[in-house]
Amino acid sequence: MKLSLLGFVFRRVRSSLRRLLWTHVLTAGTVAMTLFVFGGFMLLETNLQKLLNSWGDQIQITAYLANDLAMGDVEDLIKRIKALAEVERVRYISQEQAWRDFQVALGSQSGLLEGLPREVLPASVEISLGSAYHQSPAVERLAARLSKETQISSVEYPQVWVEKLSLIVLVVEWIKWVFAAVLFLATFFIVGSTVKLAILARQEEVEVMQLVGASEGLIQAPFVIEGTIQGVAGAAIAIAGLGAAYVLLERETASMGGLLASAGDLRFLNLKAIGLLLGIGWFLGAVGSLISLRRFVRTWHASGVRI
Image (cartoon, rainbow, N blue to C red; front, side, top):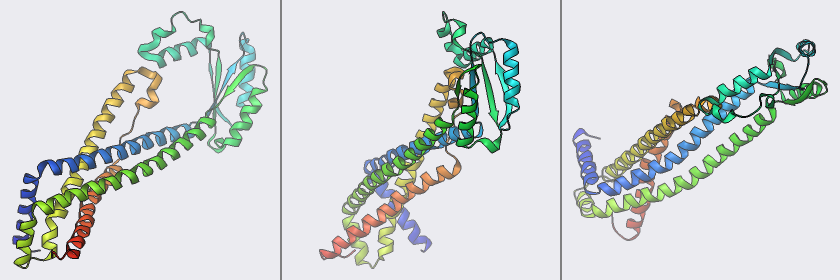
C-alpha cells in the first residue's frame, strides 16, 4: 500500500475512534473482561502446576511417634529407617521443636495457640526419599512398612494429595478452555456489532469511495485496524488487571505469615503466556472484525449494494 494511502487509512481510523469512542471503549472493555477471566484461569493453572511440581520433587513421609517414647527407642527406630534402601535422609522433630515450628508457621496468628497443651503436637520423624522412589507404589509400600512399627502411631505422606492436585490442574485446564470458547464466541458477536455500527455510521463515506474506484482492501483496512486496536488494548488492560490482582494477592498471602508461605511464593504469567493473551486479543479484534466485515459485505451484495 502506498504511503499516501496508508496515511488516508489511519486518518479514517482516527476519525472513527473519535466519533465512535464509547463504542470502541465498550468493545475493548469486553475483550479485556474476556481475557481477564481467561488469564485468571491461566494464572491459577500456573501456580497449581508450580505447587504440584514442588510436591512431586519433595516427596516426604512423616511418621508420628507414640507418646512417652524413650530416646533410646527413638534412636533405634531412626537407625532402622536410615538402613532402608528407599530412604535418603531422616530428620527427628521433638515435641518442643514441633511446637516452635508451628508457631513460626502461624506467624502473626501464633496467639491462637495460647492455652493449648504442647503435647497436642507429637514428636515425629520426617523421611525424605531418594529420587528413584518418588513413584506412588514405592511410597505406599514404605508407608505400609513404617506403620507396622510399634513406636510409630501414624504415617502421613503427600502422594494422595499430589494425585488429587494433578486432577485439579487438569480440571482447571479444561474449564479454562470451555469458558474461553463461550467468552470468545460472545466477544466475536460484540466485535461484529461494533463493525456494523462503524459501517453504518460511515455508509455515505464508503459509497463515495466506491464511486471513485477505491479497492475493497482500502475500504476494509480501517475497520480491521480499528479491531486490532480494540483487541490489543483490551488484552493490555486485562494483563494490567491480572498484574494488579497478582500483587494484591501476593501481599495478602505474605501478610498471613508462614502458614501460607508456599502459597505466598506466587508466580505471575511468563512472557509466553502474556504473548498468548496479546495474540488472542489481536485475533479477537482483527480477525473478528474481518470475519464480521465480510459477512456484512455479503449481506450488502445480496441486497444489491456494492462495497
